Image (cartoon, rainbow, N blue to C red; front, side):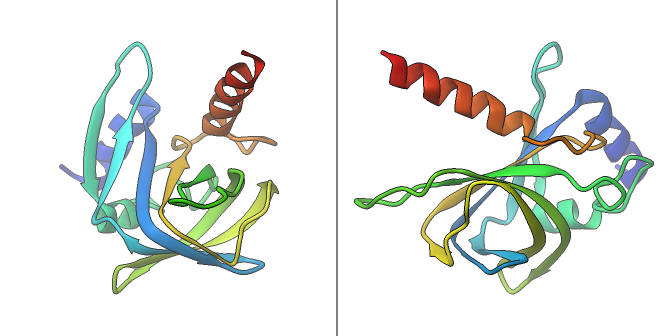
Length: 155
């Protein structure tokens, strides 16, 4: 499938993306996913409910493709933590830019919108908003997760 056709399908489906990694490091302007999985999952909500995956290297290659590319309109993303046996950091909402994939590490330049990133953390999932989603104060993915978490706390 050509890059343009794949991007068009992902845009039409409003596909969101998920990347997982064994851990992260971060500083004031960079997030590095260490031991990132070689596949990036994508999925869409109703009505299509499409699920699939692509090589993480292909995801990085698609960054600048299409009229509504992530390069033109950087996506919001939510970093979710899983700390076995420890205190789990709160999720962080970030804007991700300029992906760099090298030797099993995927680095992004970032702006933090909500929350704080630890300098180091264990296993993580990065939930990335769809192509062409306008920058907003919070991520679509993050809003849904925060609402569910608040609902669970009320009971």
